[in-house]
Image (cartoon, rainbow, N blue to C red; front, side):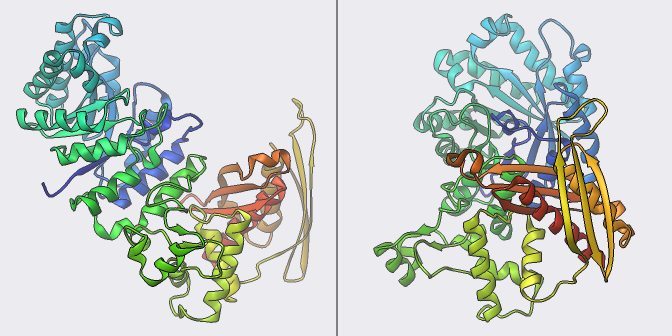
Length: 520
């Protein structure tokens, strides 16, 4: 074994997590990020289940993926009909992906009590669907749903399901711990048996209901699984799926088996945080490898030891997964990761210069206030440029007011009045909008378009708010993340304040300044 294929299902399983709802644009951004990282398969949704997924499959063709195979997901044909008559299968084919994931029941209880059909008809459904998809030229990944529960209840039938899938031409046999209730030791035992008895490569798909999805996935690889399915940050229904941000480095570093290019692992933390922002989910500080506390050390002998030799309290170097060491309650802090990002903006900067130290101190201060720059790299770049005197003063805000009122059928819900000054010339503009942020955005760009006509090409593409300290109720700080686009590229900016309008204003100003800087 010299490679394990990583199969990401964030856009399908992850989207089933409580509180997560991806837009089509979110899904496209995540797909691009996963492809750049080197994921082998991206399961992007069930085109037969909703119009949004079908729209995604149309638009994703424009991305020209370099590394990943896109996968459309769906079930076997329905009972007692031909595959050609099944609308779900027709939708999967309409997605025009080179690979398809077909799930079928391998637990007899589900066959008789959920599908309400016979065990023999279920086998026919699996066979007919796989044969049909192979005739259409598809790589078929067969997900044996509830396989481990089925094995415990009726091992002969569970294995018969795999036998039928193999004979029908499936390219992968994926064993699913759909209820997440199987212990890693049992997972390993069963995967080993399947890997030995079948010629088709085996995959593993674990849910986290016992908190062991990652452990079960690793044990499965140790016993012959060549594909691991999971989601970024472990997002998913109930307790989630196997967290690929933990699975991938464990396979690569601990088992010594390649699954993504080595050089891409330094982007793991940034990818994890970026996708948490798009998911509008708080990034867990205690995530292994990618959490902000994963390499954090507090006062005492730990700090003394780690400063003498990092191996003493760190199982890997944080930089190789794009994270950084943090020394808490201390003036001492590592800065190599920050320096590398600064040097992307100012390559000539010396890591020991006073400017770097000022930036590190300012960044620490902003992070303490609640700022997070992963997913808002444009705000970070502006911070560097402002500190180093590399920015142009494109405009000054002389005054702005926002008025909100109860919306009616005749009126929008907010109005904004903006006074800007450019090269000594003032412009006053008013605009209305669906809420204060929309009104501010419209008024500001309307005023500035007088001086910078190119701003007419820019628009706000996404807007997310996160409460940073829920214990403070309505007095809590909020972090606003704005995604903007000019139709060709997108960029993210961030603002933090106890005033949601002010936080939005900070992110909005950064967005426009970044656009003007890049254009000029």
